[in-house]
Length: 140
Length: 485
Image 1 (cartoon, one colour):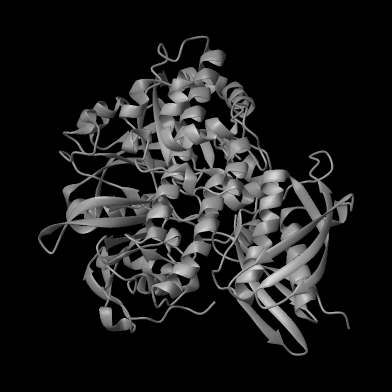
Image 2 (cartoon, rainbow over the protein chains, first blue to last red):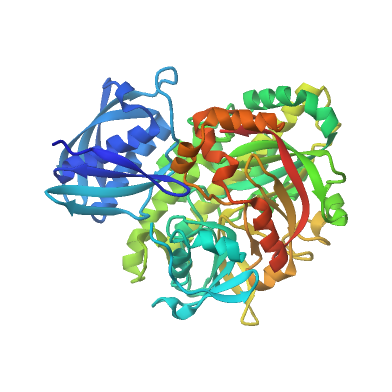
């Protein structure tokens, strides 16, 4: 059976996701998809452009936060929405990925939530059975 | 979520202590301002654990404070106050929050309810058109790179120099709308890029613009000094902060602090409490960057106040001067300040973190405007869009007890998800309209998140801080028209 890619969880003032993945690559990709599901309907984000991203941090949890903050920044400052994330390399503290998406178009994309930052609050990234599981709370 | 099972010691009806021995590492006790009933809901989450965690930060003096509107935040609770001795204490971006200098500004008018009631829809439509709001909203002023630096350095004055508002607005703004020490060199390129297009926008979430009617005056001497002279008078409340700019500054410096924590060997119970010694290069850099974001927020509220005046003027055919649209005050509720306070009977320089908490200085304090010298600094406690808001003043008790601080509003009770499951945005709008409150929002479904049911009752919150003496109730106003981002 296919595991769910992610689910949305409640937090008093904000909102979070729990993402799953068979490996860490998939986990990071699903977490990003979860983020864009909070922001808008990812099914409506076409793959018209791609960007190569490189992110680094102190450790793997930190890397997940940095990765999501990078995507939040690209949406907030450059108005780019993504719906596909190919994680090309991922070590304990460095990630390289190609992200596919398109520019925000208010006639096509409904913005559901203004996500401002991924936080370290209640951040968790653990092995989960055969795969991995991560919880991230976002500031909105 | 597990209930918080910790021990609370009753001090009096409005004060409760978390003893210093509750948890290893606590350097001071926790002090919670709440009624007995409020404590029950506070225990439902790990909010009070966060109060205990903050008590373990290096250099903290007095208490780790929790205001009655406290709720679960990241690392620090929202509605928390913590003062650290600058000589051996830390500064933490998490103790300020992502939305640096989120705050409120209140304008008075000489209008009364019967004059405005028939025009309320027009006014709200005009404000909605004239004040950029909502997700991804971009400003109608274009701020280039060089000008962005001016915003960071000058704050509200930058806007006044552009003709958006008056010199006298600055006199009645905390720090005169400009926190000293701002250094744009401490700001990342990406923070600048996020900030430039969003200057002069209300934003989304719990930010709002509200036309209110004064319903009750509790202290007419103080209220008249503020320009609130009668029941039925119209006020305008603006609640917003530093938008994506502040968020990026916080994100950037949490990273810096992560490294600082290991560099200075600081032990933390929660990673989101990342911090650095106030006097370290990291601490000083954050203070300089935070000041840039605080100034951006003051400039933001200054622009919006100007467009509010413009909108009223256009709809009602009179100048803002004729309409008596004066600023009562503007106060931050997400900020850290270096201030002088008495600690163990001696004057000390401390770094006061106020996260979801408001400065509440007493009459006679050197840092409050001349106009309020005899009555104390105005404090605004906005409620939710269906209830009411309070105007209060700071007190000597606040100065003696809470480093001159009080609460900042109602505080959330339901998560956004829970509120959405319980209510529909369109029903919320209809119900408010039936009660004479007109609401306009960029995103109607998300209005459910901001409904009364999602918030604590502001009247109960105001009562606690009033009874405890850390601020004094002056007036109460109810909403008549609301714009939500």
